[in-house]
Length: 323
Image (cartoon, rainbow, N blue to C red; front, top):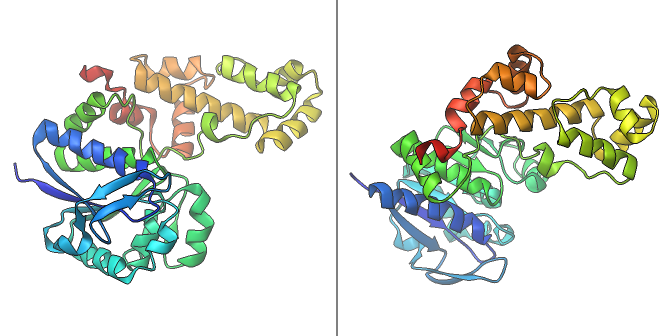
């Protein structure tokens, strides 16, 4: 098998996991197939200090790597990107590589380097949600969507922060070597579930605000304890000891969304786990988690994730099936 050369680009102040996560994905895939030649490069060869203080030795300066030999360039993010994107030698190399390489990818705020290199005009990209407004403000030529954890627009792949870089790398491996190799890589790395790019950065368990008072805390606990139970406003109000109208007002004030939207989000997360981890029919999962029918679940999945439940299961089921 011909090896594909993957160039990982660092700079002082990079986020270490933006390198280590994707790098390990490609290295594990390489051990399985022999398909990759991974190179780490920085503006100059030598030690590169990460934002956390951890130093990584870059064997190559970017000038040492011929852009014509690069299959895929992966640019890390990190606080140091705000300075690195003003390094003309670095951005010129990324621009040249972006023209000749088959693919260009960024993790988190590494997208700012791709934009500085002129590679993103008219492209749809994502980045960490905390950088969304800055990217939109400084690069109006780019279409920014910070809901997905990663996006592909032609040859350009971009992702949200940290662990999303591993999801991106697994998708790149699948693009190169097929689904079975990507799953086997995830299994070897003990990655429990390969997340779809369409999964929101703002999934309910991770990103919703936390309730500030005991009544709303009781409501949230009841929803998570049994997502499929009856969770109408009247039932939730009884958990809180509040009137339905008072509950709706307090809930929205403390969590930023209304009770119905929160319940649906929790139910979707529960259904996603069930689809990925079990063989239960879609109809059974729909009833168990409060959707009633498979059609209602399908509409909810399309609205939130852009895929049908059956497609989600086929593409992103647990890697345990390969054990």
